[in-house]
Image 1 (tube, protein in one colour):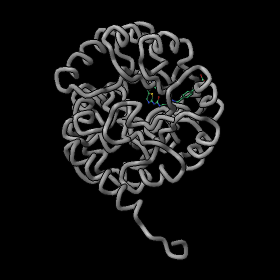
Image 2 (cartoon, protein in one colour):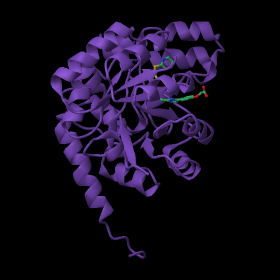
Image 3 (tube, helix red, strand yellow):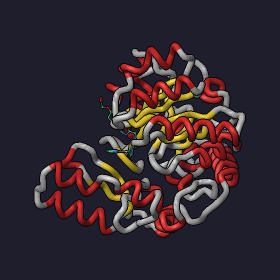
Image 4 (cartoon, protein in one colour):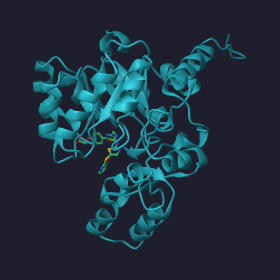
Length: 312
Ligand code: TUI
């Protein structure tokens, strides 16, 4: 079985999360340059925007990087075509089953790594030719499944014979070491990269993450079938109130339209959707991407050498 580093031709087993509106070429290139796998998030963007981002990333790094495809986007078909045309090396997917694109991506020699929220989907993805899976627990920011990272990762590891990357609630060397103990071959990190210097979101968004406490990353949208984790603000309160009153899906969706863009592009952290994971409470400062990756690697090595009382 290939290890993640060999499979993806990277130095460290760290993938950057595919955060819609947030993960543009500047953070993706910085993560790849620092030895991880940077990822451009296609989100809901049209395919020509994705093409420009891929080209901009290639100008900043010769190292491999990936594109995350959000499968609920209306532009998925064209985005997949652009990814193939531009010679992207790795595709991660979110919010759905990428089965129908697998053949075309594999034919283009692209490594495909779907995000899976369950054992059943992990098995299906392995059967359809995925090179690895990302087992993402509900500690994550953004669109989430039901299970926690602690429960999901070892069950997926036991169920498939391809590498498993752990995601959700991981932001330092301790979390990374824990993921390896659960059988993961690598980690995907989103929230900590929100505050990277090379992450091009407005400062208001970064400051909101830095200010967040342990209980600030709340879930809205369970009633619509699209639960999303974001930092508590006017928008999450309005959403929760409507959900409690039993508002229909249309009314709730209307509140969410453009909310992500409002926070990540316009910097409106009161009325926008400030996606972040539960680990946001641990994030205290802006750092360069290289500092973040070096800190993760120093921390994980230290943890893996720990002696534990009563055990060794
Ligand atoms: O996708 C994410 N996180 C996201 S996507 C996003 S943008 C968005 N826009 C509108 C509505 C909802 C989200 C913001 N954050 N993470 C990966 C992820 N994938 N989490 C959960 C899943 C998932 C869920 C169901 C993957 C597959 C799946 O399969 C269902 C099926 O079709 O079998």
